[in-house]
Length: 207
Ligand SMILES: O=C(O)[C@@H](CO)OP(=O)(O)O
Image (cartoon, rainbow, N blue to C red; front, side, top):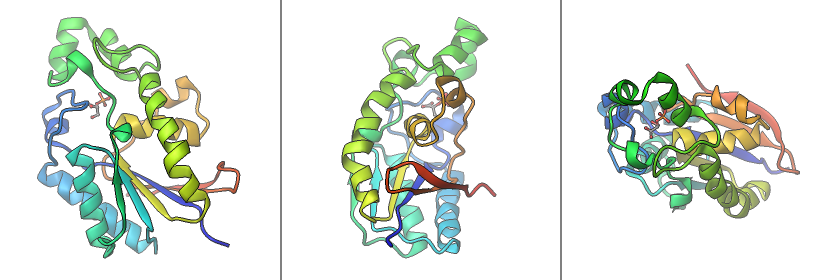
């Protein structure tokens, strides 16, 4: 029986993660630490004996570089890589580029927390998590899942909130449940799926 393997990988630390800025669709690079995390993710996956047939990533370079670095550590640079903006980070709208502490001073702790972690309240000019899910989920169901179900071992390298949207669906979390779920940079989450696309097992490769 072929394996129905799906690995989710959030990009390594980005320059704006380090500077504590809202990032969203801004195309910033990895820090040195982020490069290390991406390579470490590849080493961990290799140590698990995992190989991939296909990879998906966003249109943003922090996720693309994370994928490239991880695949290089695994000796897997030859596999097809599909890039699509459906997997981009949640668009932070007018908050993009602002410092998260400055935003708290300006709008208050509670309002900023609502923008960052509520399910359906969008930051000004940006997307809520529900809006993000409305583009990542159809892409997952139509483009990615059919490949996983026919045995293509798959990795998705993407972002905190675009992956949170997928985790919500995979792990059947409520809007309240997903808000508490933080996805660490550079830590692969390994899912094995049943034939009906439900999750058979989850393994989080946090150190
Ligand atoms: O700035 C962003 O785009 C995201 C991910 O880094 O931040 P947050 O954790 O606030 O959703």
